[in-house]
Each structure stands twice: as structure tokens, then as C-alpha cells.
Image (cartoon, rainbow, N blue to C red; front, side, top):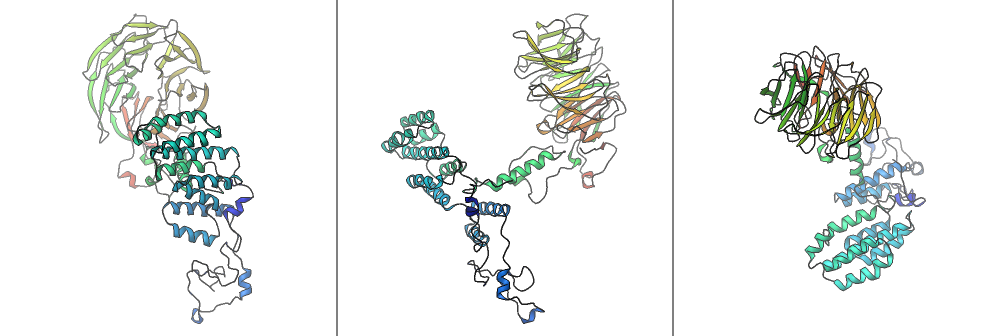
Length: 604
């Protein structure tokens, strides 16, 4: 962090001469604060707490006055001066003004320029004429000549509003016409200010101007704005130490590979005495539950958008819906949906979590739309026995969905299965509806993702890979896409810039369809199944996995991260089980970190 002061004035403004820098020209060692200074640099002659040495203190080497005066204190560096000023500003904000005076006196530093102090006091007192005169003194200390006009405009705006609130309409009008308008600055704002003359009472003025009213609150806010135009050597930015501490905490959180809790910008929620670190044991890499109700390979799993339910689809022709206990995070079977003759390879929850659509593998021409609240089948859709409906995505309005497959079908339908639109010749591998309600993303057999607009029937290329895209998912904000690419693994793409952001390492991906996911708070993490029977987890910005979860005995086909409970994740495998992953049990968290049968880590 560099000091960006006002040039040659910075040394004068930040620190006084060496005599004021804690030194005594008389050699007596007594400051104006009444404390005795030490002149021997810790050699035992004097003490800084005012205690004197005497004959009973043991062997003492005496130092002559001339020698003592020659041992001058080291001049403070620019960084040390900055720290002292930051501490002083913080103490001043706490009301410890005598402590600030003592700190400045003993260090020889100055909290802010004397002209800035006058300016601050006049603004807080509402003495606008004197505050305006202070600006002339500050002009020579400022980098930008245009800043004076902006600062003057802010001062006069506050003056005008306070006159209006006090009912002094003529005085306010004089400020508007005789002082603000001649500045020829921000005429649009002047037109807005002139409209406030029509306010019938003070409450109306404060509401329309979005202004706190005359007093400490509005003047403090004004001062914060004014300070942005002054060099820090003249007046420190407001609450500068808190800003720096907050930035440090945020940076440590950002670098923490396992940080998976809601961000809190308040410094009261952390300890400043220790570096931020999250234990791996707080991370969902421990098996909490194994669901064994399916009797064949489990091909898909997906938590509902509110995180209260989990749906799993299997080769055994069933969909099982599980209820998530909000307290224990344990899952229990809610209902079983049967009759999917070819098995269930894909599931999609409606935006309001009322409905669930189930699709089958390549040779399945049918699609099932279930009402999860009642357990009833609302729609069983099949346009043609030649179709292959293997993927589906809901429109954000919850009234439509798109579906398709590798045989060239691409339909948009309503909840009763009625065909609304179709796009011919698109061999769909996976689908996703963007939040605009118009654009549908579809990966196809040409190793690409294209965007299709069903309203104006336009399409465009967005992603082009060199190998087949087996599946993909999109982040909540619609900006990022996570692709499982055959023989390559997991790739992260920026859909807006249309660039490949990152290739994640470790996962084994052949030509099986494996579904990965975003997860955690702010979707900072990525998880994917793998053909080596593991679940891999990465921090979004790191190519190397931060955790490899073991326990499954065959290919892990799908991973789903609970959107409401960031410490809960599910994985579905060809071994016929669904594993629920969570933090370490309470007793285990008391043990030091180490590898176990469920989780091993590789720090990036």
C-alpha cells in the first residue's frame, strides 16, 4: 500500500520536524504529556514509565547528557506515519480524543492538515460561508482543480436543502440562483433541486430528496463525499482502518479453499487476532447416510430448488423422492414413482418445486411429468415412437418446458404435453433454459452448445469443444457453464465472453454420461462424479481438486449440491446407492485433520 499524498506537502502534513518527533532538544527527556522518555534504547538507564534508577538498582552504566542527546530516535518511515494516522483516526471515531492528542504529540505526526480540521468543523457546524472560505485554503493542496467546483456544489446543495427545511424559501432561492447556478456544474441536478421548492413541508422534502434532514447524519454523509476529493495526506478517507481490515478479511476468505458459509461484511463476526481458516471437517466430504432403496444402478439425483427434497432416478424404473429433515439433514423416503419402463436417466424440478419431469435413456420415447405434492402422474408425453426424449429443461415461468434427444427431436410443450413449438434436425444431448425466458441452450452431437430462441426462431453458436459434450449445467446467474466432456473431464466456460475459463484435473471421464454441479455459498465450488468411483470437488478458481470422496464402488454418475444447505451433497452411482455427504460428525471434529476412509484432499 503506497502513500499517495499531495506531493511535497506530505512530509510536512503527516509528520512534524524531528524535534516534535518524540525528541527533546533540552535533553531532559520529559514530554508535554508528562511521561519520561527513555534515552538509552533499553540499556537500563531510564524507563518509559517514569520510574527512576537509583544506587540500589545494580550495576548501571551512566550516560552523559551529550551522549544521550546524540542518540536520537529513528525518524518514522512513511508506512509508520500512515499506521499512526490510521490508529489516530480510528481512536478519534471512538471518541478517545485525549488519547489521539497524546499519540500525535508523542509521535510528532499530524492526523490531518490544519486547514482540513477547520473545514471539517465548519461543515459539521453548518457554517457554510466559512467552509467555503476553507476550500480556498485547501485548493493549493489538491491534485485536481475541478474538485473545488464539485466540493463547492456539494456544500451549496446542503446549504440550500437546510434553508428549505427551515422554511427560508427566499434564502434557498438565492442560493439556487446566485450561488449554485453560476457554477455551471451539473445543471440536471440543479433542475431537480429547483423542484424541491414546491415541497409543502419538511417531511415531503426529505422524502423526495432522499435526505436525512438538517443535522449530524446528513452533514457526516456530506463530509464523507467531500473527503473523496482531498488527498489522504490532507484528510484521511473516512473509516480507513475499518476499510483495510475488511479488505484483509475478505481476501483471506477468498483464498480459503474450504470457506462455505455466508459472507458477512461486518468485522464483528470475525476475530482480527487470527488468520481466517476453515477446516476441511466443516466441508461436505464425509458420508452421513447411504440410501440403498434402489435395486439397480442409480443414474441421476437432483435436489429441489428449495433444498427440502431429493429426487433420484434409477435403472430399476423408479424415481424415489426423499424428504430432507431441516434439523438433522437426514433423508427419509417420501414416495416412490413407478412405471418408467426404460429407467430414469434425467430429472428436472419445476421452478416452484411442484412438478418433476423424468426422462429415460436413448431408446426411450416417453416423458413423465409428476405432481410431487400429490404423487399423481399429470402427463405422460410421447410425440412419436421414433423419438428419443433424454433431456428436459423448465422455462422460468414454470408453464412450459423443452425436451429433446439424439434422434433430432427438440420440442417446447405445455404442462399437458401439448406441442407449442419444435426445432427440426437438432440432435440434443443436454438442455438448459436461461433466465430471460426466451433462450434455450442445447448441446448437440457436433460437440457444441448453441443458443436457440423460440420466439424469433434464431440460433447462434456459444461453445465449441473438440470432443463430445456429455452433459452441462449452468450457474444461477446464467454466466458460467460447467461441461463434462468425453475423455477430457470437466470444463468451465464463460457464456457471455464465450471463452474456456478452466479445465479441472483429476476426474476420469470416458464416454459415460456424468453430471457435475455448482454448489456451496455463492456457487464457489464444483463437484463431479467420475468413472474411478470417486466424487471430486474443486474450488471454482482452482484446477486441482480440494477433495476426493471415496466410498462408491462403481462409476459415480451424478452429483447434486443442496442449494439451501451448502454443507449437504448427494451422489448417485452404478453401485445402486445414493450417498449423502456432509461435515464431519461432532465428535470427529475434535480430532486433528487427517485422511479417513471417506475423504482425502489435495491442496491446490
